[in-house]
Image 1: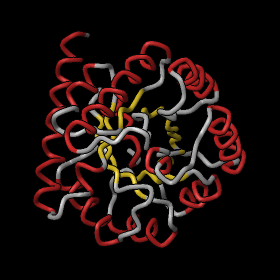
Image 2 (image 1 turned 180 degrees about the horizontal axis):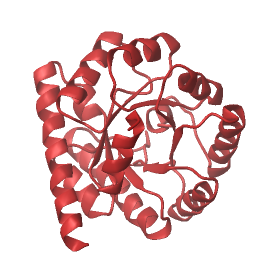
Image 3 (image 1 turned 60 degrees about the vertical axis):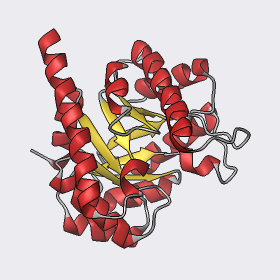
Length: 252
């Protein structure tokens, strides 16, 4: 069984938990803490930035399924050559804060460029659906990505600097958006959907109830100070996911 097969199995069972170190997190010590905690808590996969030295170091320290995230096609392809088991075109969410915007056409062009550069390399390919585009455009984009052979789509909540929210209110508002996006995408595509943005032990059950096959969890883990806290939180998420798998199995 290859490393990515574990993640695929968890996707099929609707229990996948991807722990996200962060597309813009270049703090190697923090990333190593996140990865070690994810491995200890038996998460399904870990997702890191595309910087070459970091990909090399993390690949050397774990046999976990390793996602690498970037919006630069050449970086994604290089990550595959360095041992990444999966690539994620995204996550766009954190980049909105820097003034970067993505349309459906932008995403399609980046996907096409990445696939062209990959040539005959085989890799699990996930794409984030921008949360800032309309629901109709999100659905249309997901359908096109499915037809292109993309393996997984990831939702996100819409970020806007025009609305100043903080704390639990901000978290719940954004989680509500990404969960509603999940519902719409699950209804319209056959490929698995991963729910991300604002997902933590409180909101994760709602993501699975919306039909997600996986959850992507970042800030509720990588912002913690201790490995013990990270392990405890990830363990909680893994337990929630396992309970969802049982429910799904009972319905079959």
